[in-house]
Length: 96
Image 1 (cartoon, one colour):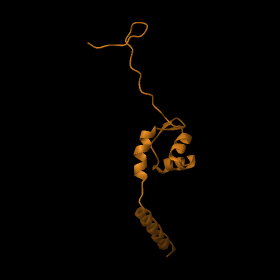
Image 2 (cartoon, one colour):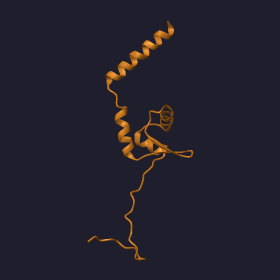
Image 3 (cartoon, rainbow, N blue to C red):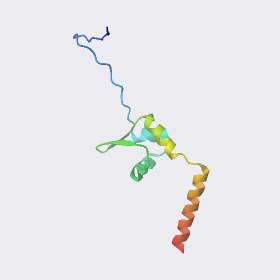
Image 4 (tube, rainbow, N blue to C red):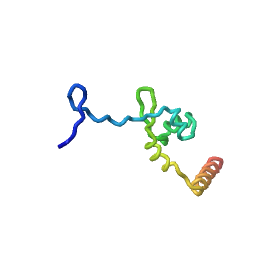
C-alpha cells in the first residue's frame, strides 16, 4: 500500500521538481574568480566553462558544470615550461 499526498481538491500532488540554478556571467565570474571579459573571450575560443544561450542572454550551469571544467584547466609547471619553449621557437622561426 502506497501513501499519496493529496491537494485540497482531492487530486494527488506531484513531488516538487528540483530547481535549476543558472548563473549570470557576472555570478559565474565571481565564483571562478575571473573577469567577465575572460569568460566572454573563453566562450569565443571554445575553451571556457559550458554555458547556455537564451536568445542574447548567457547563463552558466550550477557548480556541477564548473567541477567538470576546472580539472580540464589544471596545468603543471612542466606544461607551462613546454608552452613557453614552443612559443619561443615559433618567434625564432618567424624572425628568421
